[in-house]
Amino acid sequence: MKYIIYKITNLINGKIYIGQHETDNINDDYYGSGIILRKAIKKYGKNNFNKEILFIFDTFDEMNNKEMELVDPAFIKRKDTYNMVMGGNSGLARFSPEKRSEIIKKISETKNKKDENGISIAMEAYKKRTETITKNNPNGLKDIGLKSSATQIKNGSHKGLKNKNAKLTTFTIYDNHDNKICSMLLTELKNKHHDNLPPIRMILFSLQRDGVPMYSKNNRHKSEKFKGWYALFDDHKRTEKVQIIEYSPYIDISYSYEIYDNNDILIHNCNNKDFKKLCADYGYPENSFRYSYRHDGIAIKHKEFKGWYVKKLQHESIKHTSLR
Image (cartoon, rainbow, N blue to C red; front, side):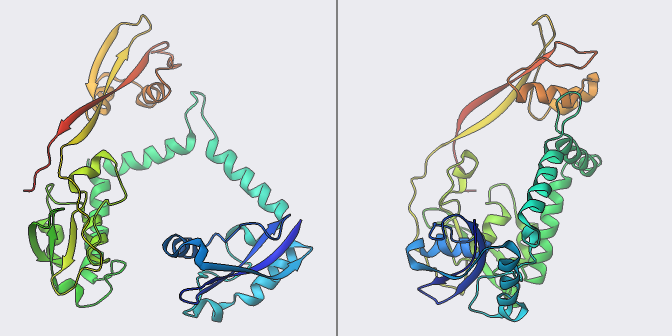
């Protein structure tokens, strides 16, 4: 095993990335794990990056110490680097390979730990947090997201919209045929937003990229309605050519559930929205029922409902988009 310090250079803009790597082949195809670096490689193409080996060591500690020496606070602040954190001290990198393996094993065991019904404990904790948030407000999670977006919009600080004057600028939303849908100030987006407009996050995504089409690389059925739409500040010029997409109906997918007892008799049939309420009204163990349909109708081990099972059915229907 060799421990190396390598440097990746963007041949287009000159930006660099210095990292460490453990390998048996110093000429392997590893190009780093930095988030910004990965995005840059995706943007410019791997052929526009050069990798060179700076140092080769026989021990992990030597490699780690050298990265700490090279990637210091001054290096992080430079404008020509993709490094985001100091070398040798980020995440698990500060630990030896043996200690890292031990930590990863413990994390994996905790994450995959299940209760007596075979349900993930981590998933149960997540569900409890979700239930607490939505207990008094069914739209609690959505409201948290909207509040966060609204705060960023108010401060003009949403990612690429850091210009102080951005929140006072009017923008326009267009469909995929360049038809004008509506215009408003950025600060009015939350109050004027409705279901016949793209999600706020996608509007902001398009705005900060000067009119990039929404969902241009996403073909999920939920995205078809607004595929190719874009948003643009009135005082900006569009930097990307409009992507012409055929305006056609889209497939809407919904789900329903069938609950059977231990004699294969259908007890209930309900849609996705009513499932939770049905379980609460009849005192059914919701988590066990969900575990059943997620595992293709496996029999429930719950004492009172032992042998019961739940099937999840998928329904597809053709819907037509609406501009207004």
